[in-house]
Length: 144
Image (cartoon, rainbow, N blue to C red; front, top):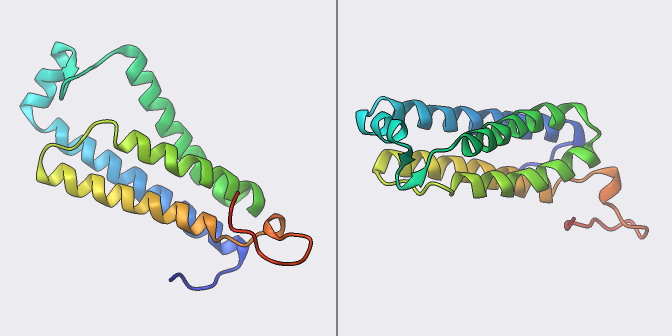
């Protein structure tokens, strides 16, 4: 399905996918901010039925910082460690993307693209062949 790459260039591909995902999420948020009902909902303390709290904003900001950190770590860490971080962060980011269910077609499209990119990161990470992903007998392990 994916073309064969060495361990170093795989980290670069995953980093590009993280940036794509980040920009897609930011575009989705900016697109929503242009709608007056979104701003009214946030000012009233609820957004699509979910309460808007300081703690929720901090958690959301923390997840975005972790996503940006994963972008940096995918290219700077050794492939074995970068693979493990991507295997952990992509499902967490998918869960965060599904926290607020999209309610209109454009949000649904952007959420689908984001989840597809995060799923691709996860799949690439599963099949990422690193020095630590080989067993003693020389066969490749694909699980964590």
